[in-house]
Image: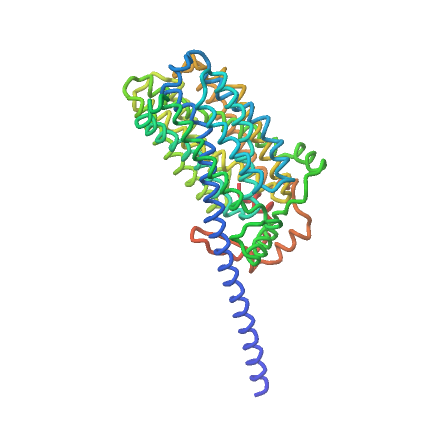
Length: 503
């Protein structure tokens, strides 16, 4: 009798402990969904708006070129190529210094300030009476835009876990396509409605409208960028949200900022992730620039009006948005990176082959241009992958992304004259042949890195005790599926471990 009573008491105690544990897990799930909802509503809204306008301000010159700027300024040489190259030079000079600054200055101060400044320079382009003014403004816009992409990724990586980050970086990348689409629609609308108004041609009105939109969005950044969980001043986050966010990052091995040191710089420069990914990422980005020549080919066919030449490429940018999010969703859901990256690159390889052959049907030629848009999301996944591998050191994560981005823009500055000289537009003698080689090299590097790096340790692992704290919380570890639920993990939760699996 007493034995039965004892058994009953023990069973009842175990039942209470189980229910308490289940209650704790459910509370954690609710807090997790609440935190992600706030970050997505406030911060990611700013990310989409800011990066949409960043890319609009970066690419609007190509729409202006086919909307009258070429004729008004007498641009019949390599001026269009120079406009892209000079922007890239400014970007190259600005990328690493601004990312070093972001380790010392709050992102919520730095990023909005530079956005407002480049918006002012976009406005100044409307006053251009010669190509030299355009060159000067393009350099300055590139210099100040350089902080945007790696800076926003750095902030995202401070708040989102590995199974969330891929989709958010894809959304960031998709915002660039949205900016290019908006540039097309905006330039078409401005050209149709404002061309000649107050004595200004439509292409100048495009720059005025762009700048007037950019500056107010920059002001929003002061209030919506949350910095990191260790120093956030975002008013939309409660102390409970901040504490929970810090716990989430600790469990996935994501270190808080501690300040950049010479040792960290040296570790980045001698690390395998930098050298394993620098060529694939750079080649991916330079090959993706071929999408900007779609409108030149459309214009050369003589089939379309100026308005349609501006509008048709927006269909390609819509494809870019869809595929970038699709690739990221598959990658996050399957916890793999490299197979999805490679598959996206095959679309670009096929497109480059078609455009190299050139003498094909109109529909196949059209498809060759359009398919390149489907590859852009692959570059975002490469940066996501690198950010996860370097998750154990916040400064290393920022610096390695900045260096990869800088190298990509070095290629953007150096290679277009050889690959895509303006005088050969739209049929470039060597450009698409070089693209084929770049696609093959990038894919052949990504495949072995993806396979072999499963056994490679991350050089940026956090201290063992931090990793152990993540491994010891199996029932509390975080998982997100498409509905935003949590996953109870059986093993290590360190992000460096997740990064090695996410290949």
